[in-house]
Length: 183
Image (cartoon, rainbow, N blue to C red; front, side, top):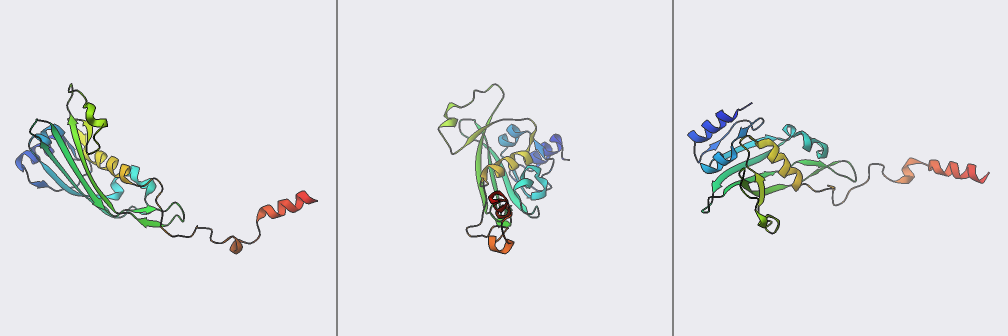
């Protein structure tokens, strides 16, 4: 597991350059990350995100992730998160796999402790606000954004139900009950 001090020193020593190792366990001080304009580029294995497992047909594969921090002219701190990939979700009609193209671009305004929450956050959909954590679990933020981007009920455009035709299954068990009721 990569600690806060290691990430901060790595990011400080490689200012404006990409850092690449496993993202699992990566924790960073997001205000410091934004202040120095750091960039974090990695691949995240789908199996590393346990909350995502419920909607996946298979957990193999990965997503490309880029996290960039910056400060604007007003001194506000921001994170830009880009996630792309093609996870295979479970179709809600046939229960088979359906490939879903992810192309997420999220802007996150960092709100420091004691700073007022922006009132325009509800009016402007181009960015979301989040608490600026001294120990931000990067994988959790990525998983949250991926889950928000997925369809509620993924399905193929055309597919058959897993049971097939009713004629293939024989007579309905309710037909026998109807015959008993008639007696």
